[in-house]
Image 1 (cartoon, rainbow, N blue to C red):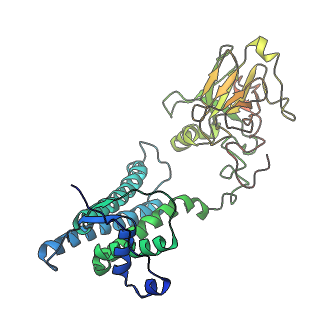
Image 2: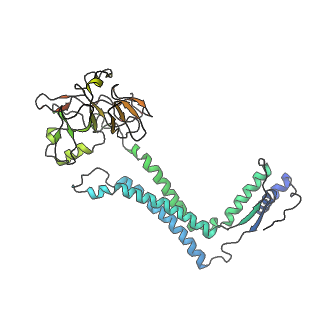
Image 3: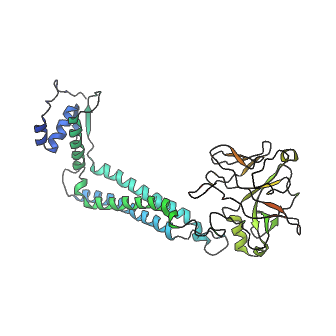
Length: 380
């Protein structure tokens, strides 16, 4: 299709003439100045108020309203749904297991519905114009800035959005609640004081390895059966081997909830590493932690000091502990200090020894520094 453009550009109006122009006149002038010609600009609803137009408006409002309801459901689930861990064979596990899927489903529906609503509105109410424009170089003059503002306003007016209160209200509802969900989820952690229980194992300064009185805390392996208690003794690991261990107290024996909690608690997993004799002779120990090991055995938290991922890999030949999430590496021969990747702090070391009465490994205390990633008040 060929388009005949005027040989001479339109006359540039004076400031006084520009001030007297209506929005439509400014919009048309802007198109002429930009060398734009509208080939087609059909009105989607030439006959106003038809049943089809009202059905289209209700369809858009439905999707925006659905987005708002799903967003409210997401916020409600985040606040009120039971999120505390419940073992598989205990009452309440079914509802606990739905916590993450419910959050994902409601949030996904909220985003999807508002997207569908925008698409339906665009297809049903925005004029599908065909325009041809000459290409030109250079920046925009003040006149261009004034006319483009008028063009945008005209486009908004032609979209008929301003005269559709049902769509405006439903969009405000859906978009507002979706924004609320996006705000509540990241800020939800601020509702709880992380230091309220700093004196016990539920605070940031302690873990499940914290001792209670004189009760011994043994090193327990996970056999896959939470009710089975299997402790670790020297000789169970070959030189150069690593095993994940968890805390166990004799008072927990026979207590199904406590046994499961000991295996599932996020800050409990510890790597028990037995160095090869020739490597153990090269160890550099952290100041104040010279007696934290037992012979060739060293115990480090599995919680990465970068972002809290599990440092679940141990490379025997290089004695490096690896975090698979962001590739941080820690040297087990140098108090697990970081040698590669984004981590900047060493892994916390758990003090261990062997119980003279039973011959099994026990911890002599909790970690002497906070485990995992940094937080505002952390000093190390």
